[in-house]
Image (cartoon, rainbow, N blue to C red; front, side):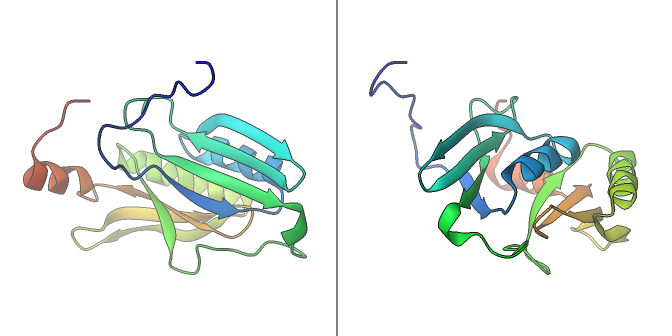
Length: 157
């Protein structure tokens, strides 16, 4: 697309959450290792660095994580924005995927919550800490999809 020709939503839509990070390369690599997110765009200017991470299979209804690392705001180490309970949530299709993510997180030293089955509607989950200490929850059978379809009806993919 050339100047000013953008695809736009037809209704107001929740599109992103922005997180500061201290090492943008390490944070991109972490999200690409542990989540379905992939690098969509990356920028650098006089203020610092930015990156957009999203899911390639969500082109019609994208939701992205915006990572920002400003030169002027460089702390002396990670400063988590989403902690100790605030978190990003990702629902996976199987309980085994939660266990696999937990095992990889344990091996990498970033497992924050051991896998656990919690009462309905929470489901089976674990959580990892990203390089800045932000919490990312991975759940199975949480019921978000079922509740959305119950209330709003099935939606085409």
